[in-house]
Image (cartoon, rainbow, N blue to C red; front, side, top):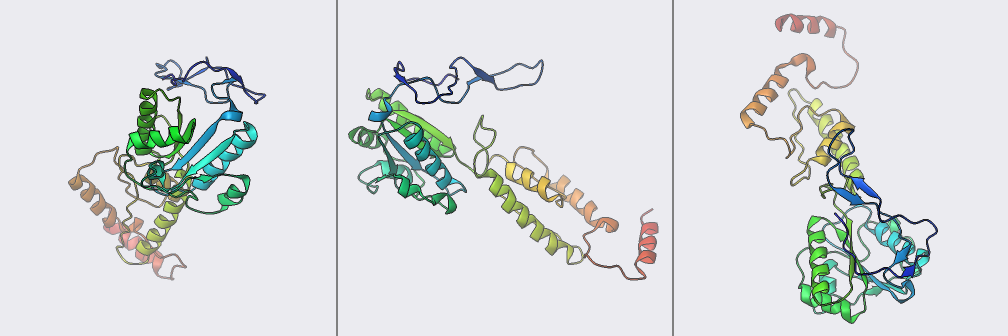
Length: 299
């Protein structure tokens, strides 16, 4: 899992604290277990391949919207501009379609004024889109604009496209560094412990579950059914269930189940009157006697 390099790093970094290239992080950290894949430790390096004063960088946000996109744009620019002193940062509008000059709008030059306060706004100030892009035209455009580094903010499809851009540029002999920033509320990007936007998705899902629980407990035999996002992974569902603690059954893609067995368990749950959803409030004077009578019926 070594990150491919563009060549020898010759320019000194402006960072006082740097990371050693030889440090590796194991995939599994359990004592006595096979460490698995070894990853490079992220962080600034002592030497850089590009001269920051001669480097032009681009940012593209792709795919669906997600909390934190503007935060990423702002943070990237501030670090590149003030931390490394990059010559120029371009924002490509409309996702990958903005890399195609025949389809996209003219990229915007990002400045401190441009990013001022954008982290307090939703969505992405650069715009987004779904779908493929002609890699040849995209790379030609990047070469023509002298872009040396491209940050692609998106999910698994976006990162596959980022690799295609890198491969296309390499085949053309153009030194293009492509950096993928994992973005998906599903949290389903491989080898990434947490993608930004996931926590917000869990918080909002927990509110929905609480509303469903209120509805279910307000009627006799009430059932609340909530469907949450998750194509191949149930991280949002699992997280929201742990936060809310009112859900009786959580079905996630990773755990197969049989419908008949689930329905049987659901029926049993509904028959247990003493654990049925109830209205909150003060019980009447005869409620204790009725509960004892019901308990005897189920002995």
